[in-house]
Image (tube, rainbow, N blue to C red):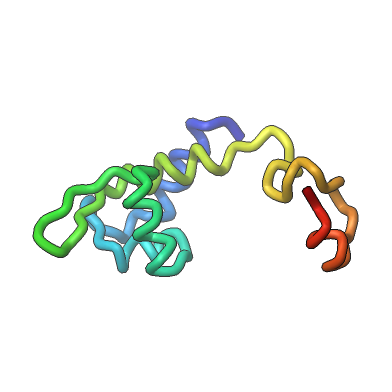
Length: 98
């Protein structure tokens, strides 16, 4: 799948949400916690408008974030470059990692 196909897929997945979503909608769309949603907004990963205490998030920002994060060249990027793909590690190995 290329980036364009992935973006179209996410547009279909999020079709039931309005064009401007709230933090609660963002949580449901991405399956993340409230804290993680506010982290994405605070770090600028997702652009938003703040009106008083409420955040208003364009739905296309969620589509864009998902399509950018979905395309990875190497599955080991998710795990970490020091760990070999498919290997199991014990807690002592993780604690002693550099």
